[in-house]
Length: 184
Image (tube, rainbow, N blue to C red):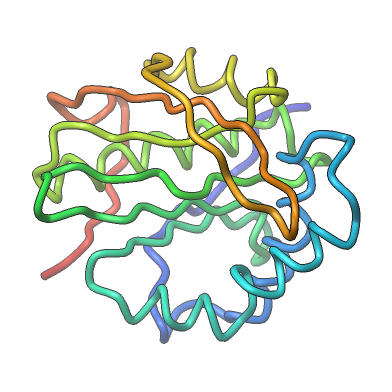
């Protein structure tokens, strides 16, 4: 797929439709799950964690940043950072792109914006969890400078999944980043 013209922006309660964001989340979350994860468990996780109401809560949290990638006026991917002010780190909690936009540079643009936002927050490390069976995502995160640093379990419905914890130390904004400003 050819690279797209994207607008990567910091989402705010005024700038993003939480129903559209929840829709893209519901569509993309299953892509991160292993094939053995049931539709019921995925639906349970999505209902509890990726609803429009939940995204409204995330948007209202000053220690949360949601970045959206839009093409032709519609969201084609998103990332979410959660700042831990006590430990001065950020979790890349979500970075999802629909399968029909894989290979178009959307994930790379979102990653660059998320890392730049973490630098702007002043954190020196970003971490994430990725399912141990999701090799595509692991390759992308490794290419983005993350390394495996441990494991954890992650609850999806009534099933426990096994994740790798991956970390990246930060120094400066990613090269070529266009600049998403987090504001005050």
